[in-house]
Amino acid sequence: MTLAQIQFALAVARKKSFCGAADSCRISQPSLSVAVRKLEYELGGPLFARTTRRVELTPLGEQALPLFEDVLETVHRLHELGDASRRPLRPLIRIGASPLVSTSLLGNILRPFQRRQPTVEVVIKQCFLDGLQERLANHSLDLAIAPVGFLQRAFDRLPFYTDTLQFIAAEPGIERSGNSAGISIKEIAQETFVLTADGCGLTPFVRKLFRRERLPLNEYPGTALTHQVIEEWADLGLGAGLLPKMKLTTTKGRACPVLRRGEPVQVPYEVVWPRRSQAGAHVTALLRHFERTAPKLVQSLAR
Image 1 (cartoon, one colour):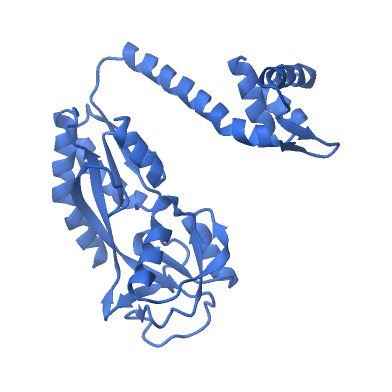
Image 2: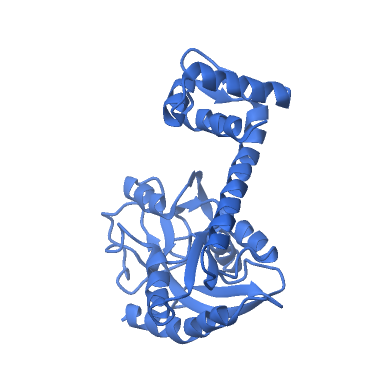
């Protein structure tokens, strides 16, 4: 099989059309179809179920698609490696971040470090928790930022920042007592909540919180793909939402803190890195910067 055949198959899967895939790959449709058939012959079965209106993945296609994506990702990384070998050596820091981490906060914290260390290149990769775990273990990340307690290997850790958990009502027009100061977790226990998949850490955090309070958690049967969708579905009245304050976008004005025993529920984050890491002084300098800068910046934003 060839790299071009894999690229063509991925294009068909994305476009759900051989014609659309051929246009995006700038190749004639017959040539693309022949290349995909050769790939299917080599794999021993069809990747796509073709109809007059639509193209769908077969069970073999469903299994092969993530492997094809891994191949292209590996090729991309090899090209990056080759590019890096041709450039003058420059210190590099590779940061992995859970989607639950505030991008704006991280940018504000990194900016002064990059001004002081202009020769250091900082690359951020957003990953789900299992991806962060794997990349830390194989040293393809220098450090990761995630909610506390979800990266379980023997890593070194540094407290990073905390955020307050906010409640977004499913009916924006309804007035609730105490909303300006917050709302108790017991008061919202009867709500149905829109949740994301487990990967970012929000849903496991919420489930653990309700379990600790011995309260039922009513979950909306659908799953939000992003945190912004939680806000959008709450606006539609499909279910209530729970988000860290710094992840709010459209519902900032009507969200309120969730209270546990009279105190706002905190979502803590940490920086994690492999023990016995061979990372250089530039990574150590960034960790020291995080330790000094993050608490002050979060405190100023909370005022």
